[in-house]
Image (cartoon, rainbow, N blue to C red; front, side, top):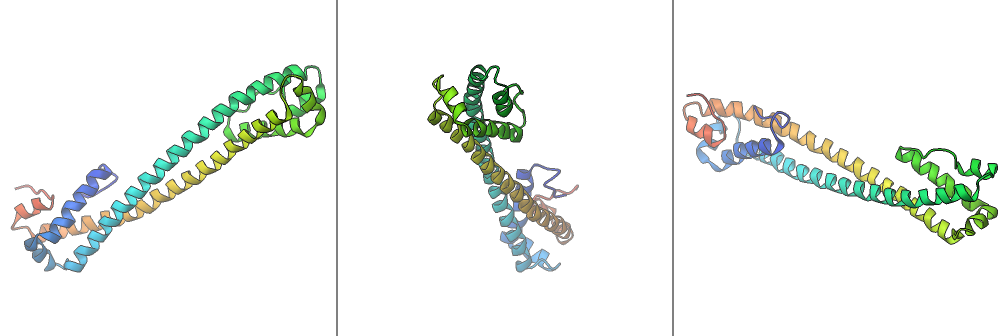
Length: 219
């Protein structure tokens, strides 16, 4: 049985290649199966499915490679930005100690959220509110946290979100490429299973030719 789910994908494609390509190139086999409806056009249709499956598999692997790269970029930027962000939080807690309004607006007593979306929103709110008031900026400036420095940190945070959006796009494309590949693999799987059964009938008296196709029958 030809199955890309029960065998490794590489094994499945290799078995299909042997089945189809040897049927096309071996004239004795081609003539025998033609008597059962598998003429040149029908064999070439199988070859086309095989070629599509190989192309879709390569495309899927490429898309997942891009996704893995975007994942690494996202979390590297996030980790680097988080370190800077936490230093600023610690300084702000010192600067605004006892300032109830600032502590509330900047969420200085709250823990840092764990999920990416919550973490980003909390950090975004922190920088937005910190840069919204001149008195906050001036107070931070007393500790060498100038407006320019804070704006640069805010810009770095936004780059993390850009990297996240790129990651989500790559993830979606990778998932779609898997679906596209599986459609072709299912078609190829059905074709190979149907054809192999016909080949067993057409070449019943010549089991050595079945072995050429990768079909092994009990003697």
